[in-house]
Length: 284
Image (cartoon, rainbow, N blue to C red):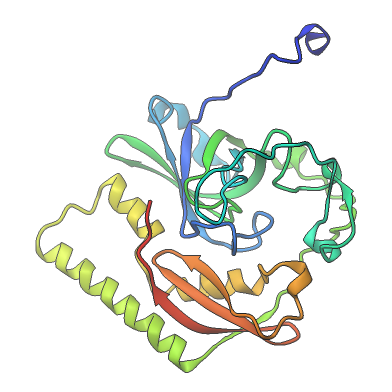
């Protein structure tokens, strides 16, 4: 009844309650669905929603629902926003169907939705209270860095998990590609890890304050760790390349991860190889 009486010009603006802090700053490389890669990230709650009292009881849940905004939908190649073309497109070409077959937008999980809202269930690793503020440490998110968070609520297995559900054109997880790494790329990566470790030792020696919100977020967003290599390989194993270029063995693709650009290319069917790992200066 409310919908019948409401004017079509009426709009509802949900507040942004926090931001997602993650190693991936660009859409390319981000998992296409949640829980495909156990990538650790943080939801930084904003005032007044960062009150620890608002999260009492959440620690009893293993997973949570996240409502969020596809904030990079209109980012162009010049890294500026372009909302000149916001026409409703009723059909999309899902990568799972090879990028050629069209289906209805509401029969897909495409990011280009009328509301530009995303919905993901992720694992709640822990709740941290730092400087009196709430940080939700999660894993398995399909969101990139700086994603606006609209809502957070517990995942309840008895009602949210439908064992007999049918999943249409995506009945199972995608088949992973094999990912290898050249010796030179491995040396490049380990060299950058050692640089980060030296920086960390210097900070500790000079008494730099590490137990801050900024320090926690820096580790997730920028500090390169040895364990990041497993995460990088897991992301590339999902094969983030466009569906229509799956047989392209000539082009090198670049995935931005934390403070590095990771270059990889197709060697043969379902075999991707990392060829270079180069440090970059990330502008935020």
